Image 1 (tube, rainbow, N blue to C red):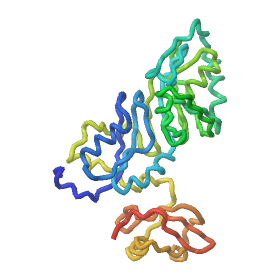
Image 2: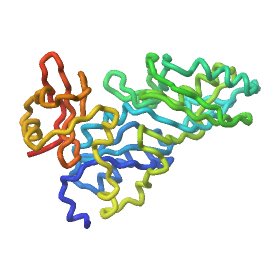
Image 3: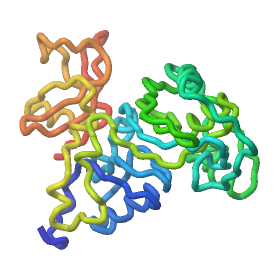
Image 4: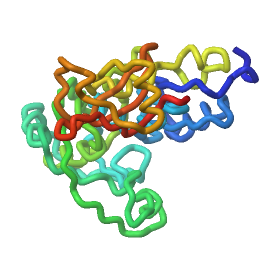
Length: 303
């Protein structure tokens, strides 16, 4: 398909392997230049130092970004002990800790334990979080004092893969909103020697794995459409219902569907993905048992 033949109606997800040294926005810009006039966005920011899985959404699929962001994530990181940084990684102003203590492997494993579970984590001051409507990293880089309150995050596991002073390699499985840089800081503080992220690779977001991720620099006008994954993968965690053409027409008009039309379904209440006869995602809706209805919340289908 030549670039001029792109009809502007295609939408979907790209599983990309973001190179280090590039911002997530840089990757979006690469795709946007291929698809002039199409809405493009990414789910889950990766710092310039980091590489790995970055899910980019195109067209109507940009309305599903938050669902991708909710997906569990896995990272591999190299933490350098004996040093600290204002950004909590090697891209910042690195300061060597004078005569740092060299912890043993059992001490490291013990220091990691309190960081696992549903825990309060203080985000890095240099982060994409907003403070008073402005990005924290913009405020911090302009010399302003940034105060970010600790937030509840879920860290499912932290596996110690290798330790040779001053570096330890970790694999981390976590929920949305977790900062690996904060984990490096916290374990360094617990060990009394300081720590920062030297290498960071995101290896998975939900069903999007690094083994299947594409190099954004190699995508062309011909290969990009073939590389799109269906929008339904963004909501794979939701229960789904198949709807008829007639029901799709109702949804496009913003009308509720009757729960009774789906007799025998195990869906009781909450969000549900509605899939059309062609297997495409039609809408995200909410099942409300009290009223016996399924209310459309985000309709992707068009007339």
